[in-house]
Length: 90
Image (cartoon, rainbow, N blue to C red; front, side, top):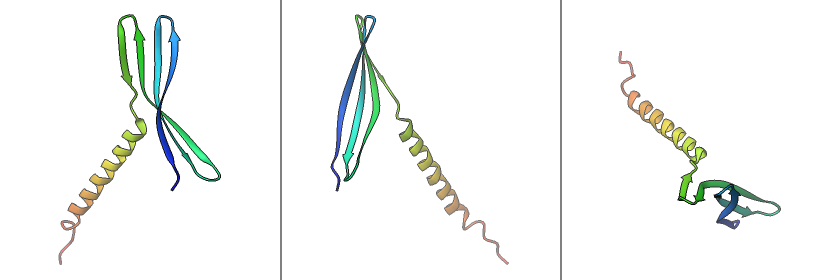
């Protein structure tokens, strides 16, 4: 099995009087002869004189997967329930 590592990276930007930190999760794996690196933004942390505010970034891919999974489950349920009732008797 290939080793997969996960870590949280912070990238800090100073814009005007605000410090903006992009928090992202890096998932990397090493397979021979190649590897992959996937970075997913998790949240933005904005710091200024008034305090800090954490703004989460939604994971659209995960939401889309859950939507399709829910639709597939609903379709399976409706197909299973309508099967016995749709048979014609002679």
